[in-house]
Length: 253
Image (cartoon, rainbow, N blue to C red):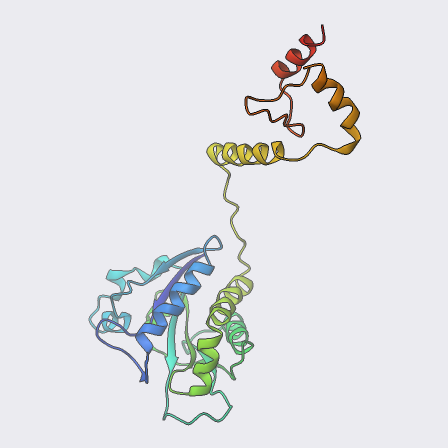
């Protein structure tokens, strides 16, 4: 699957602001973390972080920057805002939007549930033709806009800041689950294999010999049949090459 992740606002537009938090900053943090977690599961493209996708839509540059039709799914990240409220122990929560013409919404509902499970109120799925996701829908691409939580609600932001990893993992895991994505197995190169074997053999050589071979080892060492390396290490748990074997047999004469 080819996924386009869009961070809301930016390029001079901070989005919603509350205290030290700016929506444009947080959407990029979330999108970056989600993209990292999805590596190997799908092909993830980040919309240029220095740009504002909505401004690009208004000026007709959206498809020029990143052709929407080249993706299978578009997910736009935002943070909600309302009249700021005091901390009351209740979260306002997470919600997700799809275009009004969208007919399949199971995946989006699953994403919303997953984020809510971290500790946010589930505001559920809503349908609205937000500019960017609607442009993607018109291009024939499934799309959604995720409002992670309310940036001006202290209870929401307490969950978000203290459970940031859990929030981004929930988003990524839900995408993996809802779209039945499988992690691609990366082939091991020859260089990686030889490096692994070198480490394995070196570690094996450091292992102490087993007690059951005490008598035989004492005899072989006394007879100079087993002499070890230049450092005197007998390396009893190492594998024996044919050269080493015939050398030991030769010393028995």
